[in-house]
Length: 397
Image (tube, rainbow, N blue to C red; front, side):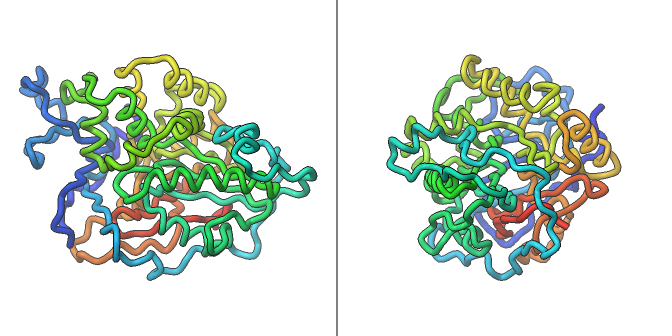
């Protein structure tokens, strides 16, 4: 039994001020799928799966603890920018990085040859000292909010171009779905990767579970996959979890190549960077290189069912919450290195329990959330539920 099994999330909560219910997502770390054409053979036994979901839907259960909730996207036009709350500012006593990693090497997101073909400036010849390290939480298609948050931290200029010199940025995944412009977000991150390299810094990104879902919807469409709720498809699950048809229509080959090359896990300045707050990464390897190779190999060679299994594993959540949280975080750190886990995936209002109140007020997210005996930092500010899109400098104190 894993820590996720032992410490389930809060009771389901559907109250709120949004009358729409078009994005029912993530009950207990899982994704909704259509009912199978026939009764699931385990339905009589219950199998631990919820019933009576809206629209006759079933929920694909991962068996891991979490909160069932509705995440609603803001209207495309007219919604407020997330400026009502103070932007997290790095304190003046930040410690510098211990060593200078390669800074003109672009890493997984894009190759140097790609940059020159695209006409971007070449990387700086003299790397110089390493710059500060930043992380960005789940974006989910909210391009305007992302530009606003990056500009507030001085990382981009008013036109959205890199202005941070030798700074380093890691995006923690989930670029698409729910928000209005997922492809625009991907294009921006690719652009910043090139511009940062030219300035002697870098901009890199992790693969989130929504990247797997998005790629699966493109590659496998309505092809049946076997899930615990019965036969489903990537496209059905993607649409029910905020998939935007215009993003799929705008998806191009260079987007696909970039997304498939993203690492699942990384280590920077003693921070173990993950998308999902789960121990499922341990199931893919005993080192960072093994995990990333396993995920890349799966995306290159395996079929729909294998993709679906990987997607489900990376959808698990809340491993670091509750009494067993420090143990789960410590296991990852002992295996992959580092002294603190930094993740996205689970919105901070659900980790803190604030999303379970009935006030109907916008969640208060002052900044990254440190928990699990200070072994974990959560970076999903809940932009899809009227929280904030977080950009923070590491280390967070």
